[in-house]
Length: 462
Image 1: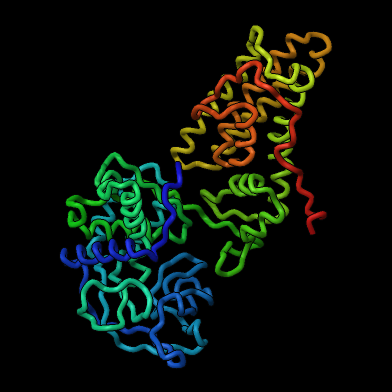
Image 2: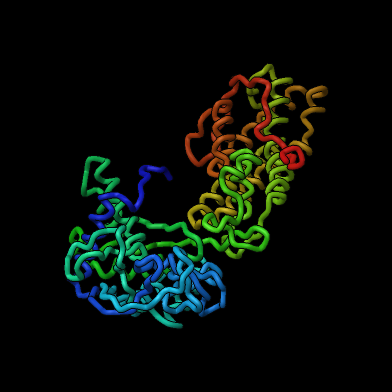
């Protein structure tokens, strides 16, 4: 995976692609005009976007639900469903006023989206069950996709008169297509986006939180289906997998940047090294259930798992090689069954973690890498090269060479999670040639090492 483009949905390119999709769906009969009631703030003197309205969720009674979605239960909402609505601009009680808007006919796709979901395999159970349950419970409902705003994407038609814009609720997911087109332009081949969107061999994986499941598993497929073959002359590729995570909670509250719950990146990096923070969060990925996390739990994982198992392993092996093997990677003598078993274990672990990454089982892949580190520690404890260095130096050199080889494989499994410390090992052992364990070249210089990670002492950081 590589980051080939960083963009936003605020570009002229995105606006053009959104308008193109709007016109395609309009031509296919999936967009129509309707008069409906919209909330108006009498103090601010303006209609309110959905997220500028808060009130009581009709499904779970959460008091601070937003007009488009409840943060507590994850249900998408229409602002008029909220109890005791209030304007986020002024705090006033908004008034309902009639306005004409364009609606997307999501209800036309209940059957097609249902067939699409029934054909999915390998999805996380909570994602598929949520999406299917939504269809069984209330189904897809038509929604207004324009608002009375002075920001947003201009309509490509003037049927509604001035002051109307395409609303972010509809256009945000179009960013996946518009980004692909922007990327193609940057490659110098404007049609290259079709390699991903008109190609059944392409694979689209959407990494999101569970509150975004309906947008990606229901509404986005419906919008893609509504285009037909009017963009590029062929149907657009539907999502292949949506490995939505559950919530990370801090002291019982859902982590939320907008609500100030949890650690910001800056706060986390004030307390922890980047790789240490990445490790602790990855070890607690809420892949199947909500996960409670705290600063203290992050520190515990860093000290008891990352530092004690992996960091200390690397440090002690490099230190012993530096001290007892003439400051260089030793050559290997004849391998015993015990030696080969360790290397086979590391190789098998990389095969296993490759499949886990393919299935987006990231926490399991991290655990597999840590299992390799633990196996190497157990090998060292059984062979005791620090004792062999005095009684059988040649055997000690082979044991340390095997341990270095194991470390060279384990660090590949850790590399997606620990990019900075992995790069430090690249400088010592060489850059891996792929998702495999490379042989460490005998004679490679090994200087006195510095620890990969520092132990966390929260008391001293206060």
